[in-house]
Image (cartoon, rainbow, N blue to C red; front, side, top):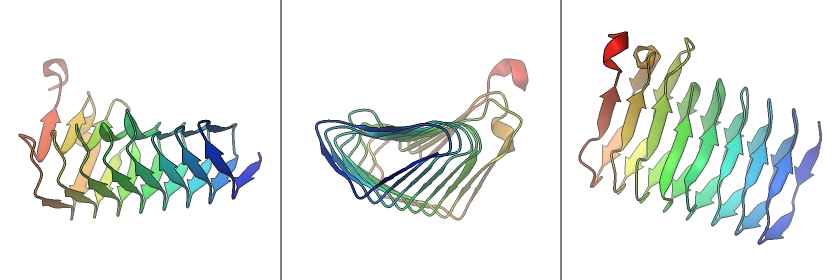
Length: 171
């Protein structure tokens, strides 16, 4: 456990172990990385992303211009009220809850759900706008455990707002 709070980092990253928290930090040119059961909230990350392991909470963060995914999350992650803008890809998640997030002007896929576990995933009340690639992509052998409801898709430029990819061997 531990707490990283109110730090300003330029050209570097914040890293934390199991059960730690990163709250109200500003990171430019790097990212925030955490292990299992971490909390990452109220941070601003520019030019990098946030990556967390399983059972994490990622909320109220602003991620802009990440060269890869703005947020990468493991299994059973709760991601709420984040703003992911102008990144190569918005968010990659395995399972958990993705609620009330803004995905705007990302160049590739806005949200990729990789349903490869038996746990369910809820994608509720998110806004997707001006994204360049496929907007919401659900893939994996257990993609059928994904629940999508009440999302707003507006002005996206990719070929699909919702794309489901279930391998033929699991159908």
